Image (tube, rainbow, N blue to C red):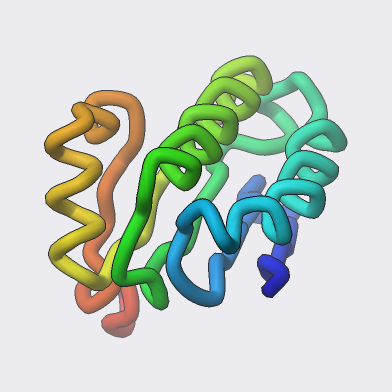
Length: 118
């Protein structure tokens, strides 16, 4: 399993789409591509203002997945960008709230994000 990673220079947006659960059995496959994209992220808010982590296809995030989210937050913060997490499953929202990661990322419901004009 590999993430889909795109960068839109007009919107200054790096998008990382995770195709399933973010857990100990999937993170090792996802991490190298994500780390390469984050390392390539210029350290300037003029270049990238938002790192969007799309977890809409995920139903679960475990401790290794949370660790990857924290790494993404640290890289984005160093680049002067904010992090958005797109979630669809209530388990993802509960996990991010319980671990207080909601204080470090902007949470966006996939149902709302996918509506026209959202």
